[in-house]
Length: 208
Picture 1 (cartoon, rainbow, N blue to C red):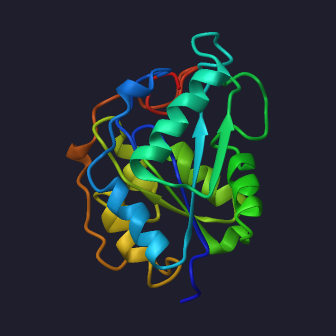
Picture 2: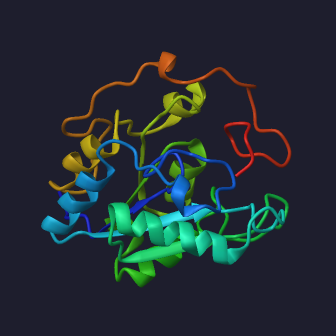
């Protein structure tokens, strides 16, 4: 296996519990194992970054300063992270950075000094792993109660939590269909939802 150069995490629902359009640092709550996962990466000399859609800025619900304050709190509780990349645009903005487009991943990889093929994106919805695929990176889905069954079924790699995913990566980039220490996550893990994305919302049926 070739070594992983950088791991890029989704923020909401992956590193911290998802609070829609959160602009309050006091509401940041890390998910179990997130801090340990980032510490493990640092211990192995692997750079860590965050790639996050924040359409609340475009919707006028939060400001960019609010996003930065929340990001600083995430950095304090879980980081430090080497790279932050934020898309503030809405789903109809046509920007190249909003996941599932690859722009955030490509920019973060460049800033981390890594080729996309040496990067892994860890997220909780299909848009995260699709952005990784389009960028030429590897993707790991870590489902939660909002992840749709079809997203879990379509993912190349699925891990039950971020710490398990990171433990698998310290040996090298994913090869084949199964990760070291990877365990199957049943469809029951995911909440039921409509069969396809609705206009103006993410693939979980909830705006982000």
